[in-house]
Length: 129
Image (cartoon, rainbow, N blue to C red; front, top):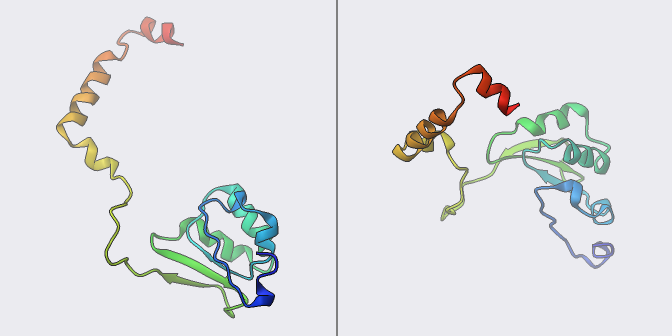
C-alpha cells in the first residue's frame, strides 16, 4: 500500500471499523466510500484521515440509510451521497427482524415464562438488589 501508486497499482481497503485499520495504510488513501458509521472512535478516525471534510458532512454519516454511502476525496469535487444498486443475485444476508420474532408462538411463550418468573412482591424485588 505504501508504494503501489508509483507503479500504477490501486488498493481497496474495506472495513466496518476504520479505527482498527493501519494509520500507515490510511495515510496513502486519497478517496473514500463510507457507509453509515455511528461509533465515535470510527467517526474520529475518519475525521483524522480526512481533515478536508467539513463537520456538516461528517454529521451525515450516522444517519445514512441502508445502501447509501458518502464518497469523498480527490476523485470528486464535492462529497457526494449515492445509493448502491441491489446485488443480483441478492445474498441471503440481511438484518434480523426482531419484531417479527416477537409475534411467533415460541416468542410469546418465552415472554410468558419470563413474566411468571418475575418477582411479585416488593420484598422479592429488594432481595434481588
